[in-house]
Image (cartoon, rainbow, N blue to C red; front, top):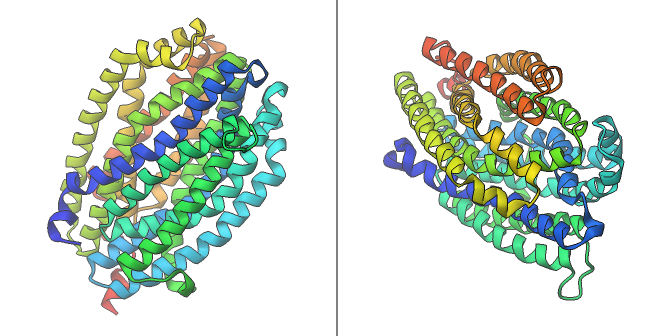
Length: 452
């Protein structure tokens, strides 16, 4: 990785942004195409709501994939910053092996307990089978995602962000083609509706995994056939990955509980939530891409023991991210009438979307603080504090505020999003204070290894 690429946030972030954009497009394409299928076929009513419920259940466990992916990104970046490529490669190979087992465990859990989880969140009976149909094939594909994510994290840490970006773009093209084939039953395939979208995703993720195998060999010089276990690497990966995954699991647990509030509002509001989250994902990608790029740079700074460089760069990135997200949010609000109309003709859904997006700017500023600074803290080796605050804020503030505002104050779906905003803002300000106090300094994961 060259010095210029290593330290230039915009050069590093752009391909990550494009990668995330096309990754999000996969989910959006599924939503748009399933929405069109639902409009054209009366028997497919509730398909969009079913995907929304299934995705929440899948994400509750799918986030465990990030245990290793997050750990690889930080550990490899710190090793490379410390000029220890041998340690970086050991971490990558160990991480891939860990992901194989994690992917199998997650897929099995979802397949066995999926219907039980749908009942727990009070998924309307009329969409339970559709929800499980989507979950079935998507759960299987998580095995492929687990391995691909581990390799992609390694490639990014080495600076090969463009290659990962191109892979995701190509995967999107295949996803659209497969969607047409399996949702609508073209080229002799059966017409599968919601399940067809999941089959499409599964095939696309399998092909993506194969491509990452090739990139791993070509760009880093490692073969998937040589994966092996290294105890020290595993411990370092888990030190970063477990708190990160538990934090994300806490978020998904909050969403899981909140979805039960949404389900009580009826299928119309479930569908609205799915559309709102689809649009929000495009604002989110700005924060996520800046956060990912900054985390890699922070890892290099920490490996070099340049703590002041890490401190200043993260503050600069945070300010930049908030500015970009604010512009994106205002733009979405200006074009929301067109966006909402393209998604649905239901006047209640459109009205509710307009109400929610009036307050989205507060939600996204809080989320920007969380994403950028929390990932910087992890990259510095400060992993416990973000987890503790996540548990306190998400479960204590997010769920309570969502219930109070939506149920007690009768604000419905709007109240739920306002409750989530309270959580994001509180945690965001807490993380900013943590960074400003510089408590995270001298927590390098590889310092002892490089000195010994």
